[in-house]
Length: 150
Image (cartoon, rainbow, N blue to C red; front, side):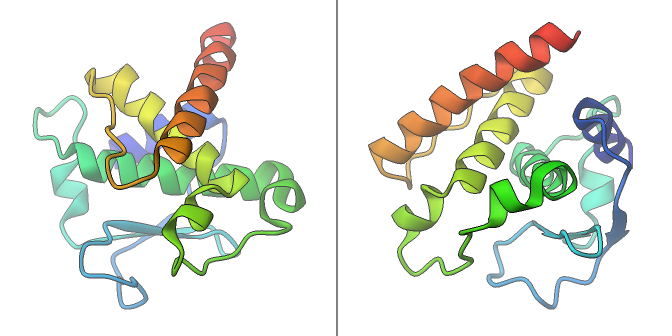
């Protein structure tokens, strides 16, 4: 899948295995999920046909989700303890969940990818202003890092 390859190149990680088994997805709206332990990116069926950077067909939500999940794999590859030491997958308090270091980072990276590739900035309307501000601040840090690399 070309989009996955491109994001992995940016992150400087090897491509994960791709699976279309979404039986573990928590909601019907979940588009992608990473199994960081086994380095597998699970995608909704037909996702490979929807995301094509050069081919013209585009689903920005799916691109965001894939970038988000690949960044989780990057986190696990580069500094597992730093990113996931206190991580909780409990999303019953969505604000607390999204304020976690790992989630701020992956949302910021995915937002940066969507802006860079498609000129589309994510509006985090379902998140608190505090979470949205932290994501924007982290995105600005990442933009400096990734701009300096190129």
